[in-house]
Image (tube, rainbow, N blue to C red):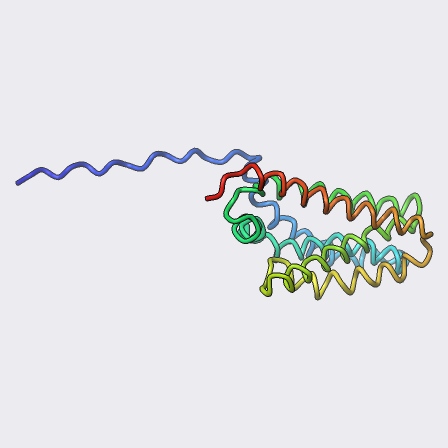
Length: 205
């Protein structure tokens, strides 16, 4: 009998670092935190005005939206596979930075500013929700298919964003509206520019 050849063992996989685990799993902690914040609102928000309540709600609502959008890395894969032709234009680290610093941190600053500095600052939260929700709808219409985050973008973002603009925005000046909208648009354009730059340089798979 011919002796069987030993089957080569698979190369050991290096364990992920804490930072890698954090950047890969941020959405699950965020979505659960969003639910906790919503559950605590009746207790901690009893003295808030309606305008303050709506602005604060923008953060946990966004966290819940992010679960639909980023669970199982679906948004990054959608962008890379569907919009970039298989190119790696959006990395796991990109998604983490965009959502934690470009959304959570921005909304935290907006909420603090609306409570402590100038209530109409909260109008920025309304534009952030509304613009993002409309982009999901526009993309769905253009591609004639579902995109990650579409359902909560329609069901949660559009009504809450519009309500914030109607209630909080009534006390904001035209300049404040334009600045808030401009900041939100610039944030989205920066993301688009980064993806477009990576798409030009990254080889197709």
